[in-house]
Length: 289
Image (cartoon, rainbow, N blue to C red):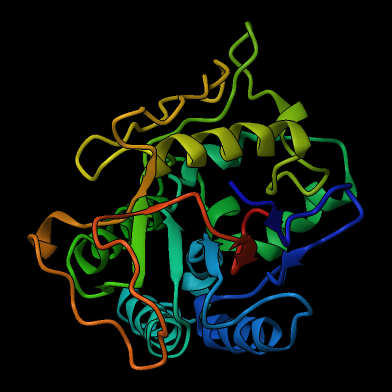
Protein backbone atom coordinates (compact mmCIF):
# COMPACT_ATOMS: atom_id res chain seq x y z
CA UNK A 1 0.00 0.00 0.00
CA UNK A 2 1.38 3.40 -0.96
CA UNK A 3 0.68 6.90 0.29
CA UNK A 4 -2.10 8.79 -1.46
CA UNK A 5 -1.22 12.14 -2.99
CA UNK A 6 -3.10 15.28 -4.00
CA UNK A 7 -5.80 15.33 -1.34
CA UNK A 8 -6.38 18.34 0.97
CA UNK A 9 -5.29 17.96 4.59
CA UNK A 10 -6.98 21.11 5.92
CA UNK A 11 -10.06 23.12 4.99
CA UNK A 12 -7.90 25.83 3.40
CA UNK A 13 -5.96 23.47 1.15
CA UNK A 14 -7.37 22.45 -2.21
CA UNK A 15 -4.98 19.69 -3.21
CA UNK A 16 -5.95 18.72 -6.76
CA UNK A 17 -9.38 20.36 -6.49
CA UNK A 18 -9.54 22.09 -9.88
CA UNK A 19 -13.31 22.59 -9.94
CA UNK A 20 -14.72 26.08 -10.53
CA UNK A 21 -17.84 27.31 -8.77
CA UNK A 22 -20.63 28.20 -11.20
CA UNK A 23 -19.20 26.36 -14.20
CA UNK A 24 -21.54 24.58 -16.58
CA UNK A 25 -20.82 21.45 -18.57
CA UNK A 26 -19.74 23.62 -21.50
CA UNK A 27 -16.72 24.51 -19.31
CA UNK A 28 -15.86 20.87 -18.58
CA UNK A 29 -13.24 20.55 -21.33
CA UNK A 30 -11.50 23.67 -20.02
CA UNK A 31 -11.26 22.14 -16.56
CA UNK A 32 -10.10 18.87 -18.08
CA UNK A 33 -7.28 20.54 -19.99
CA UNK A 34 -6.20 22.30 -16.80
CA UNK A 35 -6.16 18.95 -15.00
CA UNK A 36 -4.06 17.26 -17.66
CA UNK A 37 -1.56 20.11 -17.73
CA UNK A 38 -1.37 20.05 -13.93
CA UNK A 39 -0.72 16.31 -13.91
CA UNK A 40 2.10 16.65 -16.41
CA UNK A 41 3.88 19.35 -14.40
CA UNK A 42 3.10 18.22 -10.83
CA UNK A 43 6.29 17.44 -8.83
CA UNK A 44 6.55 13.80 -7.85
CA UNK A 45 3.87 12.51 -10.22
CA UNK A 46 4.94 9.99 -12.83
CA UNK A 47 2.39 10.76 -15.54
CA UNK A 48 2.66 7.39 -17.28
CA UNK A 49 3.11 5.07 -14.29
CA UNK A 50 1.08 6.52 -11.39
CA UNK A 51 -2.63 5.76 -11.07
CA UNK A 52 -4.94 8.77 -10.95
CA UNK A 53 -8.48 8.88 -9.52
CA UNK A 54 -10.75 11.73 -10.62
CA UNK A 55 -14.20 12.50 -9.21
CA UNK A 56 -16.70 14.51 -11.27
CA UNK A 57 -20.11 15.92 -10.47
CA UNK A 58 -21.37 18.39 -13.03
CA UNK A 59 -24.62 19.28 -14.77
CA UNK A 60 -26.71 20.75 -11.98
CA UNK A 61 -25.77 24.28 -12.97
CA UNK A 62 -26.97 23.45 -16.48
CA UNK A 63 -30.37 22.63 -14.98
CA UNK A 64 -30.26 25.85 -12.94
CA UNK A 65 -29.69 27.83 -16.15
CA UNK A 66 -31.86 25.83 -18.56
CA UNK A 67 -34.77 28.27 -18.70
CA UNK A 68 -32.37 31.11 -19.55
CA UNK A 69 -31.13 29.34 -22.69
CA UNK A 70 -32.89 26.07 -23.45
CA UNK A 71 -30.57 25.28 -26.36
CA UNK A 72 -27.23 25.97 -24.71
CA UNK A 73 -28.21 24.14 -21.52
CA UNK A 74 -30.09 21.28 -23.18
CA UNK A 75 -29.70 17.59 -22.39
CA UNK A 76 -28.10 17.04 -25.79
CA UNK A 77 -25.43 19.66 -25.09
CA UNK A 78 -24.87 18.23 -21.62
CA UNK A 79 -24.04 14.84 -23.15
CA UNK A 80 -22.03 16.44 -25.95
CA UNK A 81 -19.73 18.33 -23.57
CA UNK A 82 -19.47 15.40 -21.16
CA UNK A 83 -18.44 13.09 -23.99
CA UNK A 84 -15.83 15.54 -25.30
CA UNK A 85 -14.17 16.01 -21.92
CA UNK A 86 -14.17 12.30 -21.07
CA UNK A 87 -12.75 11.49 -24.50
CA UNK A 88 -9.95 13.96 -23.78
CA UNK A 89 -9.09 12.15 -20.56
CA UNK A 90 -9.29 8.71 -22.13
CA UNK A 91 -7.12 9.66 -25.11
CA UNK A 92 -4.48 11.59 -23.22
CA UNK A 93 -4.14 10.25 -19.66
CA UNK A 94 -2.90 6.73 -18.91
CA UNK A 95 -3.80 4.86 -15.74
CA UNK A 96 -6.89 6.76 -14.69
CA UNK A 97 -10.23 5.97 -13.06
CA UNK A 98 -12.95 8.61 -13.36
CA UNK A 99 -15.83 8.60 -10.89
CA UNK A 100 -18.84 10.40 -12.36
CA UNK A 101 -21.34 11.04 -9.57
CA UNK A 102 -24.96 10.96 -10.70
CA UNK A 103 -26.86 14.26 -10.53
CA UNK A 104 -29.19 14.74 -7.59
CA UNK A 105 -32.92 15.37 -7.73
CA UNK A 106 -32.89 19.12 -7.33
CA UNK A 107 -36.50 20.02 -6.52
CA UNK A 108 -36.12 19.42 -2.74
CA UNK A 109 -33.37 22.08 -2.65
CA UNK A 110 -36.16 24.64 -3.02
CA UNK A 111 -36.95 23.96 0.63
CA UNK A 112 -33.50 24.92 1.96
CA UNK A 113 -33.91 28.25 3.75
CA UNK A 114 -31.46 30.43 5.66
CA UNK A 115 -31.63 34.12 6.63
CA UNK A 116 -28.54 34.87 4.55
CA UNK A 117 -27.72 37.04 1.56
CA UNK A 118 -26.39 34.00 -0.27
CA UNK A 119 -29.71 32.25 0.08
CA UNK A 120 -31.47 35.28 -1.38
CA UNK A 121 -28.98 35.48 -4.24
CA UNK A 122 -29.72 31.87 -5.09
CA UNK A 123 -32.96 33.17 -6.64
CA UNK A 124 -30.73 34.64 -9.34
CA UNK A 125 -28.02 31.99 -9.49
CA UNK A 126 -30.52 29.11 -9.81
CA UNK A 127 -33.65 30.98 -10.78
CA UNK A 128 -34.98 28.19 -13.00
CA UNK A 129 -35.27 26.01 -9.89
CA UNK A 130 -36.12 28.54 -7.18
CA UNK A 131 -38.52 30.99 -8.84
CA UNK A 132 -41.28 28.77 -10.36
CA UNK A 133 -44.37 28.38 -8.21
CA UNK A 134 -45.17 25.00 -6.70
CA UNK A 135 -47.07 22.76 -9.15
CA UNK A 136 -46.42 25.22 -11.97
CA UNK A 137 -45.79 23.96 -15.52
CA UNK A 138 -42.30 25.50 -15.33
CA UNK A 139 -41.39 23.51 -12.23
CA UNK A 140 -42.81 20.28 -13.65
CA UNK A 141 -40.74 20.83 -16.79
CA UNK A 142 -37.59 21.30 -14.71
CA UNK A 143 -38.25 18.14 -12.68
CA UNK A 144 -38.64 16.14 -15.89
CA UNK A 145 -35.49 17.76 -17.29
CA UNK A 146 -33.61 16.69 -14.16
CA UNK A 147 -34.73 13.09 -14.69
CA UNK A 148 -33.76 13.23 -18.36
CA UNK A 149 -30.27 14.42 -17.43
CA UNK A 150 -29.99 11.37 -15.19
CA UNK A 151 -31.31 8.98 -17.83
CA UNK A 152 -29.03 10.25 -20.57
CA UNK A 153 -25.98 10.12 -18.31
CA UNK A 154 -26.77 6.49 -17.51
CA UNK A 155 -27.19 5.76 -21.20
CA UNK A 156 -23.76 7.23 -21.91
CA UNK A 157 -21.86 5.59 -19.05
CA UNK A 158 -23.56 2.21 -18.63
CA UNK A 159 -21.64 1.04 -21.68
CA UNK A 160 -18.06 0.24 -22.62
CA UNK A 161 -17.65 3.62 -24.34
CA UNK A 162 -15.08 4.80 -21.80
CA UNK A 163 -13.42 1.55 -20.79
CA UNK A 164 -10.05 0.11 -21.74
CA UNK A 165 -7.24 -1.70 -19.97
CA UNK A 166 -5.77 1.33 -18.21
CA UNK A 167 -8.76 3.68 -18.14
CA UNK A 168 -12.33 3.56 -16.92
CA UNK A 169 -15.21 5.95 -16.32
CA UNK A 170 -17.59 4.66 -13.64
CA UNK A 171 -21.02 6.12 -12.90
CA UNK A 172 -21.54 6.26 -9.13
CA UNK A 173 -25.34 6.50 -8.63
CA UNK A 174 -25.67 6.96 -4.87
CA UNK A 175 -27.19 10.47 -5.13
CA UNK A 176 -29.74 9.59 -7.82
CA UNK A 177 -32.79 9.67 -5.55
CA UNK A 178 -31.29 11.12 -2.36
CA UNK A 179 -33.54 13.41 -0.36
CA UNK A 180 -32.15 16.21 1.84
CA UNK A 181 -31.75 15.66 5.59
CA UNK A 182 -34.75 16.65 7.67
CA UNK A 183 -35.30 17.66 11.26
CA UNK A 184 -37.94 15.98 13.46
CA UNK A 185 -40.37 18.76 12.50
CA UNK A 186 -40.04 17.82 8.84
CA UNK A 187 -38.05 20.87 7.75
CA UNK A 188 -34.77 20.52 5.84
CA UNK A 189 -31.75 20.45 8.15
CA UNK A 190 -29.95 23.63 7.07
CA UNK A 191 -26.76 22.61 8.93
CA UNK A 192 -25.88 20.47 5.90
CA UNK A 193 -25.86 23.51 3.62
CA UNK A 194 -23.66 26.57 3.26
CA UNK A 195 -25.07 30.12 3.48
CA UNK A 196 -25.96 30.04 -0.24
CA UNK A 197 -28.53 27.26 0.47
CA UNK A 198 -27.14 25.23 -2.42
CA UNK A 199 -23.71 23.79 -1.64
CA UNK A 200 -22.91 21.36 1.15
CA UNK A 201 -21.03 22.16 4.34
CA UNK A 202 -18.27 19.90 5.68
CA UNK A 203 -21.00 17.99 7.51
CA UNK A 204 -22.71 17.31 4.19
CA UNK A 205 -19.46 16.50 2.41
CA UNK A 206 -18.67 13.84 4.99
CA UNK A 207 -21.81 11.96 3.98
CA UNK A 208 -21.13 12.50 0.28
CA UNK A 209 -17.61 11.13 0.68
CA UNK A 210 -18.84 8.01 2.47
CA UNK A 211 -21.45 7.38 -0.21
CA UNK A 212 -18.83 7.72 -2.94
CA UNK A 213 -16.45 5.37 -1.14
CA UNK A 214 -19.14 2.71 -0.80
CA UNK A 215 -20.14 2.92 -4.48
CA UNK A 216 -16.51 2.57 -5.58
CA UNK A 217 -16.30 -0.87 -3.96
CA UNK A 218 -19.63 -2.14 -5.31
CA UNK A 219 -20.04 -3.59 -8.82
CA UNK A 220 -22.38 -2.14 -11.41
CA UNK A 221 -25.92 -3.24 -10.67
CA UNK A 222 -25.21 -3.62 -6.95
CA UNK A 223 -24.31 -0.04 -6.01
CA UNK A 224 -26.38 1.38 -3.18
CA UNK A 225 -28.49 4.50 -3.67
CA UNK A 226 -28.99 6.89 -0.78
CA UNK A 227 -32.61 7.56 0.11
CA UNK A 228 -32.04 10.38 2.58
CA UNK A 229 -29.22 12.25 4.28
CA UNK A 230 -31.15 12.12 7.57
CA UNK A 231 -29.44 8.86 8.53
CA UNK A 232 -25.61 8.73 8.62
CA UNK A 233 -24.07 6.54 5.94
CA UNK A 234 -22.19 3.54 7.23
CA UNK A 235 -18.86 2.90 5.53
CA UNK A 236 -18.26 -0.49 3.99
CA UNK A 237 -14.91 -2.24 3.83
CA UNK A 238 -13.70 -3.83 0.58
CA UNK A 239 -14.00 -7.59 0.76
CA UNK A 240 -10.93 -9.80 1.05
CA UNK A 241 -12.06 -11.58 -2.10
CA UNK A 242 -12.22 -8.35 -4.12
CA UNK A 243 -10.22 -5.53 -2.47
CA UNK A 244 -10.45 -3.39 -5.59
CA UNK A 245 -12.25 -0.41 -7.08
CA UNK A 246 -14.84 -1.87 -9.44
CA UNK A 247 -14.31 -0.49 -12.93
CA UNK A 248 -15.57 -3.01 -15.49
CA UNK A 249 -19.01 -2.15 -16.93
CA UNK A 250 -21.30 -5.06 -17.67
CA UNK A 251 -21.35 -4.02 -21.33
CA UNK A 252 -17.60 -4.61 -21.60
CA UNK A 253 -17.90 -8.38 -21.32
CA UNK A 254 -14.59 -10.04 -20.51
CA UNK A 255 -12.21 -8.33 -22.93
CA UNK A 256 -11.09 -4.75 -22.32
CA UNK A 257 -10.11 -2.44 -25.14
CA UNK A 258 -6.37 -2.26 -25.90
CA UNK A 259 -4.55 0.21 -23.74
CA UNK A 260 -3.28 3.44 -25.28
CA UNK A 261 0.17 3.52 -26.85
CA UNK A 262 1.40 5.90 -24.14
CA UNK A 263 1.04 3.27 -21.42
CA UNK A 264 4.36 1.68 -20.54
CA UNK A 265 3.30 -1.21 -18.36
CA UNK A 266 0.40 -3.70 -18.29
CA UNK A 267 -2.29 -3.09 -15.71
CA UNK A 268 -5.06 -5.18 -14.13
CA UNK A 269 -7.97 -5.61 -16.53
CA UNK A 270 -10.84 -6.36 -14.18
CA UNK A 271 -10.36 -3.73 -11.51
CA UNK A 272 -7.60 -1.61 -10.09
CA UNK A 273 -5.87 -2.69 -6.87
CA UNK A 274 -4.97 -0.06 -4.33
CA UNK A 275 -1.30 -0.98 -4.45
CA UNK A 276 0.45 1.67 -6.54
CA UNK A 277 0.78 5.42 -6.05
CA UNK A 278 -2.64 7.03 -6.41
CA UNK A 279 -3.30 10.72 -7.04
CA UNK A 280 -6.70 12.09 -6.08
CA UNK A 281 -7.94 15.17 -7.95
CA UNK A 282 -11.43 16.64 -7.96
CA UNK A 283 -12.71 17.94 -11.26
CA UNK A 284 -15.88 19.69 -12.35
CA UNK A 285 -17.48 19.56 -8.91
CA UNK A 286 -19.49 22.63 -9.78
CA UNK A 287 -22.20 21.63 -7.31
CA UNK A 288 -20.09 20.34 -4.44
CA UNK A 289 -17.77 23.32 -4.03
